[in-house]
Image (cartoon, rainbow, N blue to C red; front, side, top):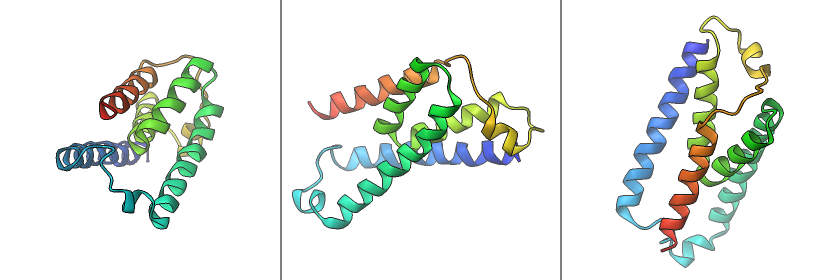
Length: 133
């Protein structure tokens, strides 16, 4: 099952990178027309996405024991969304044995902070900074 999760989260990361690069070639990040940005379904979709991000983050908050890891993953998830979430889960699958049971994988806590969370947080901040220029 862990191998299946690795494949799934790799697909999520790859597709999110692909669609993000494609979209950035089509229009600027904050180039959404006002009539789209103020549309009720656009707003509802943003609420849905961010509540999903925060729901996933509850797992990260519980799993990570370091406040540094918790904070950098929060920034990464809020700025990069599913790309950061899939990266977190993918990294977690590579820390698990291929024979690990999914409940054990989900419940495994971490004492150390990997460099991936801070790196993705910095990438997210850089993307927003560049988009605001």
